Length: 247
Image: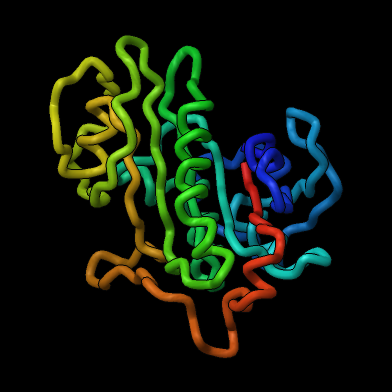
């Protein structure tokens, strides 16, 4: 993901990621904040290694902005393993993206289905296609402040059937384990059905998963309070895009 983002013109990539694997931590954070130190990704890119959870990594980047200021976008992943359906509630990839959205910044959580091999280029490519479509709105401050979840299958047989925009299905009785890229099903009705039938699913998630009796929160427009999103106008449109990346 970092390599793909760094290849984009006029884009500054800030890498902030957990120092150790913290899978399944949702949006959990370390009381009092997590410590951090310079580090590198497995591919050798410089960044910040945060001694905490994925949400800590995003929060650290937001609390310690570089000379470019606050990021225009928080992008997390690509995670090894799908985060469709009810799995999204447990996912550190999703939880850290929600941390960005709750701070007023559009966020994208990117996950790749399990496989041998794991087809990371599939989900990364879908994320870059999403960014191509949304970059202008991100730069001018009109992109909705919400969490977009991208899940791509790793096809053992057949090929990826393309990206579909579908609702998120967080119900407990869905099958979240299969990936059938040879399926002929059309017009999937949810992220789970899309992924299970060989599509890359693109779904909007709540910015915060509520208790069962509460309604989810999904902000559909940039905030206009004192906690503003990145400034809009000509200066913002011309400024480098500065996403935060977490593993």
